[in-house]
Length: 72
Image (cartoon, rainbow, N blue to C red):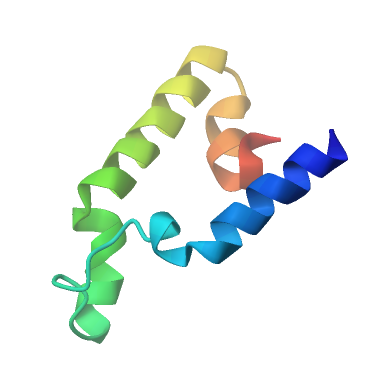
């Protein structure tokens, strides 16, 4: 199992452009970097998904799930 994980990591390290999710067209300047989490569709959908899941869990988790890394 560890060998398989090392092979996958080696493949991702060998081809770093696979992990690039954002194009350089929209990344022009400091303001674009600040606005991207708000205006980027991928970040908006991620925030919406976290909000929906935490609302379904209910209680105090409405506030704790979005505040904790990895939703622990």
